[in-house]
Length: 283
Image 1: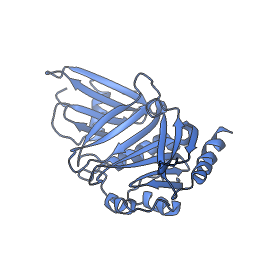
Image 2: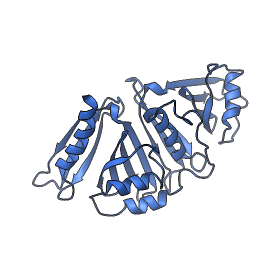
Image 3: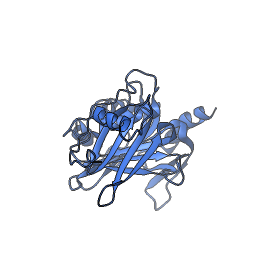
Image 4: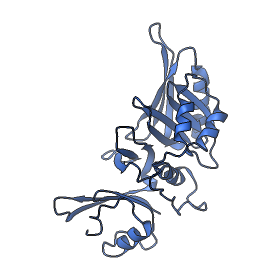
């Protein structure tokens, strides 16, 4: 508890691993901490087997909650960058637990690389856990805050065009910022305003640009295997937008939907793209 109570935000995974294998004996013998970061007295870490949240409570800090979520229980996740007026980035995990549909963790701006966290979770939920590097973690660059390449991506995303070239989206999301895995490809992309819905070979990715400046961006991912149904709705006489929805088996995120600009996006092209993913999965 004395070690947890320090103000330092950056945590050495190896030091935390020693602590959790020592006095507290929280980790299994074959389990290792691969990523760790800290806000105040609380600590969040990712091990080779789970996400572990350590919540130090009370005035004395003698009351501590250790909350564990195995990766096999996770259905979706999102990371959100800090805005101009918001000090914290945000991590959301969506486990298959109806009594705890979403777990939210704030991350101090400039002290946690949200893109590195996103990439690590992608490896765990979308990739093969046996591939090289899946359990090695990703270095957390202090001060980066997931900002590398994001400005250029937002400038490109902020255009008015609604028809989006999937090849260009794939290039952007493999470089600025690097959201997609090396063996993952963006196959379809649909854009309304600053927001985008991307269908890849592994997931449905929702990019939500928020705030007046657009500096706050949420990257929300749900693996295709957890997408169960879908719908499209044409616009009415007084409605400028068509509507679409992808329904999931994620308790905290039952529908991933987006508006489709009337006259700019073919709803049947959207339906065909989603059908190719979900119907092929269900065969």
